[in-house]
Length: 277
Image 1 (cartoon, rainbow, N blue to C red):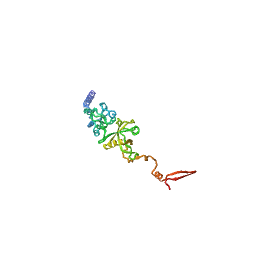
Image 2: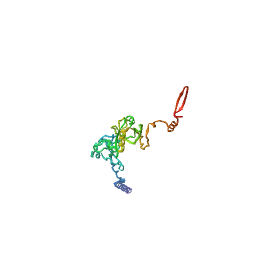
Image 3: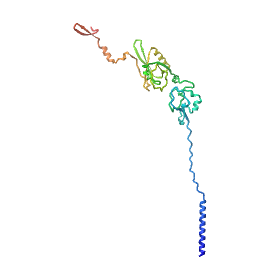
Image 4: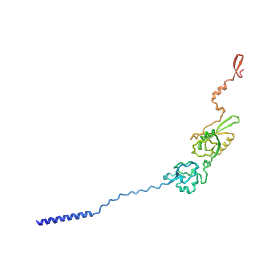
């Protein structure tokens, strides 16, 4: 009996020892490290260029200052030509003394064509088209369209004069002429009607000569065109006879009717045709 018990004890110890050895080996194995996720390499986005734009609205004739300008990111393939990419480029060439030749809206790129040359004034001369001249016409509250004429409008110019036959007539001598300024105001964004004494228009040299002669032989009036109406219109000379409302048929019938005179003979009144036998 004692021998059997001894064997059972030995077997139990062996089993317990084996369990301890297996457990220690199990815990001694290094833990499986998680594999890092694959990293996809993405090329960084290219740096966008900058363009100098107006930080606020800039009026005609206003001198540009650094605080009026900001740099904004601009798509690479649509950078406007003849602009500035940085404020340093703008200021580095001494352009801060430039003036705006036309109104520049907030957020609009600063185009070189909208700036006066270095040290120049924002004058009408800098706004003239190639081969054009500026010519001033005397106007008043009537001939100047009651003050509703503004820089940038287009007009027809009419001449009223006395013909060699002593009759007065009016004719359109120039059409679709651009108004550059009224008195000393040349801002095309001006929207306040004013009655001026002169209107400066853009014409070619021949038209300027024609206007100079027309001012000596008669009086000039301006007719305001509808915005966008640039087509030439056939005009005829208008004289006093054209002011009546009689049609040509009425005139013909009136001319064909005989001239009558009423004659009283005693108590009798008769109508007789003048020139009748």
